Image (tube, rainbow, N blue to C red; front, side):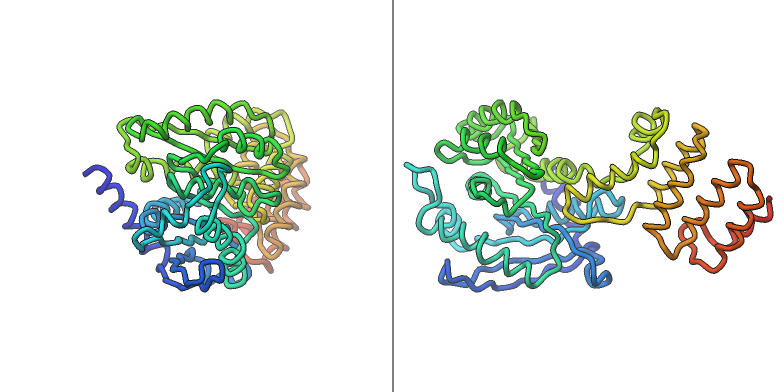
Length: 377
């Protein structure tokens, strides 16, 4: 009952984020068409030049709702980037087992399992890249058998996915040793999430715990690994529990500056506040493979730290950064004027505030706000 309520709660957000559309993708590998469901983020039809991360869900018929609900909620608070969700369905009897077939000896996809693996990497991803505006950042998620299939992509020399979400994964032969070896060699950021529950299948749980111990020992700074264990959870109920942890873990760098981050990491710095902000967004760009405009709230957090610690010279650098991010907006002129004001050159400050009248306002930094600043001087 508790899980049904949670799923209903999450599903309530889906209507906010967008409509699900069904597509048939032709496949030579499968000698058939495969049905997928696609959910585009809210701004997709508005921001024509923007590219979006891809979240590919195996077992899409039951994983779409919890993922879509969590993302929709996170969009509201700007804590995750808007993401294109593609759910691959396996509704036909026996199809899931066929899609995940492996050779027990080699521990690798075989027969129909190899065909499905190639369909995902060689046909579906190019199809989606051609049809939708996708950034290089891709996540794949699976549950037990399909999580095993998702992990096979880590065996490839060029990784098609940067994020891997494994719900109670079934491990193929030697996967517990091959995965750590592959992750240890990763040359670009890889986000790897796995989970289990106290009520999980004992056979799976034992191997997952052993894998966890090995993955925790990886020293590669490119690998960001998260393992979560849920109490009072089953092999199936762990999915709605784990989806938020998986997504928030993978998208951790994206979040705006929080009060805790400000208090513990920024306000305590002796200097270098603008450098901190620049590096924060460099990490986001490296992680997600795309640049993003610095949030107005993050500019304000850095401004507060500069004023608090009387490091007024940094306002000049903040002004330059604001002009780069918002070239036609008032905010850059505001920080330049504030620099002159705080360093005692009120004449120049007034001139800058007045000259900004021809620019567009943003947030609280309006033309009236700037005129009021000039009149006070």
